[in-house]
Image 1 (cartoon, helix red, strand yellow):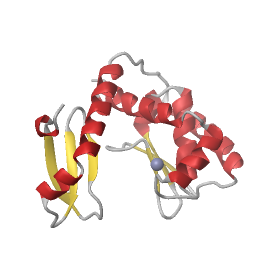
Image 2 (tube, protein in one colour):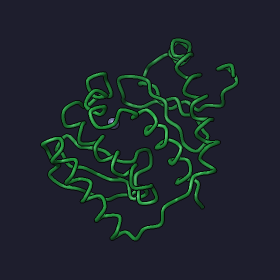
Image 3 (cartoon, helix red, strand yellow):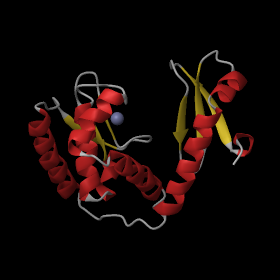
Image 4 (cartoon, rainbow, N blue to C red):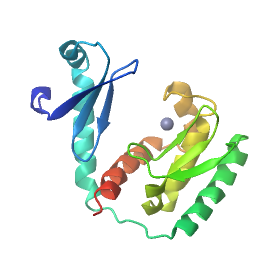
Length: 178
Ligand SMILES: [Zn+2]
C-alpha cells in the first residue's frame, strides 16, 4: 500500500522525535511542535509503510485471539508473582506497583522506578503478562528500545519479536472487546 493512501491523523506534541501511534485501526502521526509535516512524513515514508502493514496483519489476527477471564484479585496476584520472579532474575525491583487503566501501553516504568500495569492486561494469557513485567524491569537498565535493551531481553526471550507482535495483536483484541 502506498503511503499516500494510508489514513492517518496528525497531532503535535511537546516531544523530541516523531512517533507513530495506533488506536484501533487509526494511525496517528505524532510530531514535535514546529516540525514540517510534509518533510517529516517524506523522511519516514518507509517506516510508516512498514508499520502500517505490520499493524494491518495484527488487526486481522486479533479477531481470532481469545481473552483470558480473571478476577482483579487473581490478576494482581499473578502480576506480583511474575514480578518477584523477574526481580530475582534481573536483580532489581520497582519501589511501587500501580494498577491503572492506560490508553496507549500495557505498562510503564516511571523515573522514580514505580511500575504501572495497565488493568486491561488482565485479559492477556499468562506468558504475555510475564513478558511485559520482564520487559519493564529491563527498562531499569536501559530506557530506550535500543540494541542493548533487546540484548537484555533476549537473555530470557530469544523470540521477543514474536511476543511483541502478540502484544500488539492482543492490544487490538482487548481494546475492541465491547
Ligand atoms: Zn519498552
